[in-house]
Image (cartoon, rainbow, N blue to C red; front, side, top):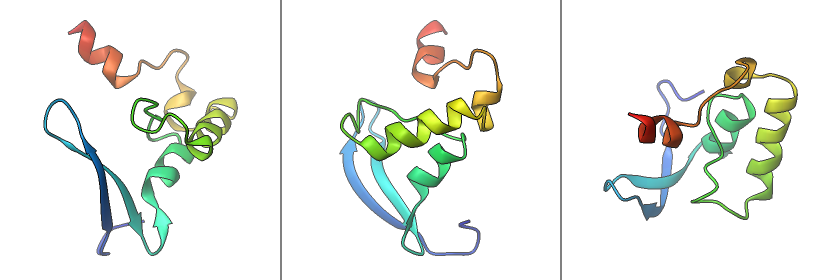
Amino acid sequence: MVFGKTVEIRPVDVDQYGRTVAWVSVDGKSLNRELVAAGLAWWYKHYAPRDKDLAELERRARKHNTGLWFQPDPVPPWEFRHKK
């Protein structure tokens, strides 16, 4: 979807580790939403708590066992890091 293309980054925050939290788009499409819909990313509610679109896209991916939701009990990255 993005190989060889120019992406637009719209920063919205900086996390506790100094990483930029942003909306990323390419050709007018939200890469954030595309990744969540494909089950390749989590909806991180902390940074987008009221984003109904992301919530619905993740719900559908879970329902259809898409991407990471194919696993029986996927562990969110933030929980995985806390266990280390």
